[in-house]
Length: 425
Image (cartoon, rainbow, N blue to C red; front, top):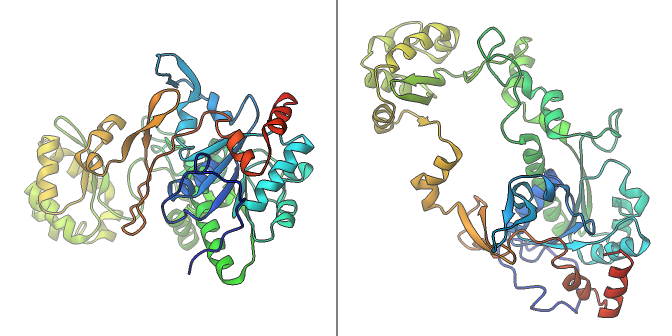
């Protein structure tokens, strides 16, 4: 069933509103987010073809524009104001600068909300209510609006007024208790994940929630208010580690690279480097033993089943480590690949983008940019046969689309100039 959209202003022009393509080409998103979680969700929508209007502070913009170095370099070789952090999560959007603390700015956002299908924000709970930009205010303007609020702790509860960042939520949410080497081994101790994983997962959950609400709206005509908390997301994605504790009563601990439920899965040293081994069943273990010329391990009662391998992991890991040191890494990976045993080299990020599969899938692309000439982007992994994605709009320069978007609302040049002079835009 097609997703009904909110009415569009008649003033939209081909120059300011180029034709969109993709599964969400008929959707408009009002992006009041900043930093990462909400912008990650809205970049997903932009990649899917939605018209995403990013609201930023005049003269300053999203905080992440300044989170560098590194910064994008202009065509003349000078650093721009846009950090790599910002460029990673704002592709495909139109930047509009509006001071939301001023009544005129609030009125503009109300008018934009009237034309939008979705609004997303990640201010602290209660902040936008002061500016008449909360869910109740904007849904009063447009009852069909899907309003998604992303916060650290949600709209209620004892922590609702606290600020939150990914690092803190990784700690509070249990992730760091199961990430890192064992405390009794060299390098042991809590570690965060090398990516802002809670922000990214929260953005993914936000996208899923909004798409579900749009589907429901197609059937009922009703908008929705979504309350999404980063701490809730982190608790949810504890997944098997949480269930291990619930079933056994044993508190999961850091185990380095070892899998708590499946073995052998670990990092192993070869003669000239390391590889990851990810055996997932007894058949794969038997083929591993074949490659290693250790057929006796297949019938050893300690290792014959996955449960035995988990219980006797310390012994098995020592045996495998000793044997792996006899092989060169790439030769062993090739031999294991040939018999269907999952394994992999540990690539650096440049090596990832030099992988022939990644190059074939064109995951890295260079988009035209109004200041730098081109800007590199890691594009969406989504592939649609009937509604292919198109990456034709780079991360915007601050305020790049303010006049175009506001002109679509019917504001003339005199009104725009007056607002600019008074710091509204």
